[in-house]
Image 1: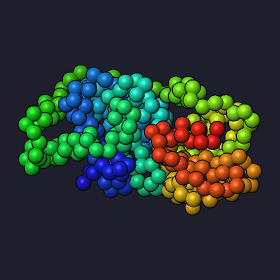
Image 2: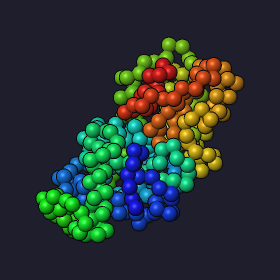
Image 3: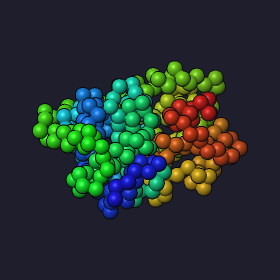
Image 4: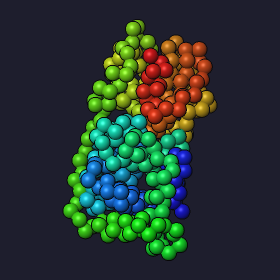
Length: 292
């Protein structure tokens, strides 16, 4: 059963997280948008570095396109905080991320981002789950107000019968860097920072921006690996033992790590102390403020 939790819908790849089920969720998202008359706004789609993540994202794009919804698809795997920021900046109807955060390589998942940029945990995902149930079983067994049922039926009937939406690729990095530049000051000295994106989507973002701030940067695990080096891209002190060792070895000012979609971070200070990142709407910005 497809069920959204605090981190979205997360399931094992090829068991529950299949192309068939992802298409079902994509259709439920399309119905949700159309039923709320949000189909005229763009909708963002992106993904992290997991196995087949881009292909899963493309299946969602196809469903939304068939529903007449215009889609903006990122050029490459992209951090969730950046997609959330772009959702606000582009006044989009929302976004979906193919990601499973800190979970291991055997998992994938979907996060639904609301127009205001926050990951939806309650109302909208409950409605999407309702539409999933309706798709599977019809109107029977669902305690849904008559007006909502009519909206669902009208929205579902549009898919495949309207003019196709337009799909465009976009690269959000420079626009997001412009936003960060107004929030974070240039480095006064040239601190040495060890950055560990853990083979995830923060690579090519955090390291490059720190360099533009005047920092010296050493990156670990800075390439895509769908297996995450054989371990979870987690952010516990145990997960970051190698980063701690590198910070101490290089006498760096600090170490900075992210999970697979940069939806969370953690710090290692110059003495090797571990610091869990604070919860934030934008963990990348929060991490930069914590070290600069």
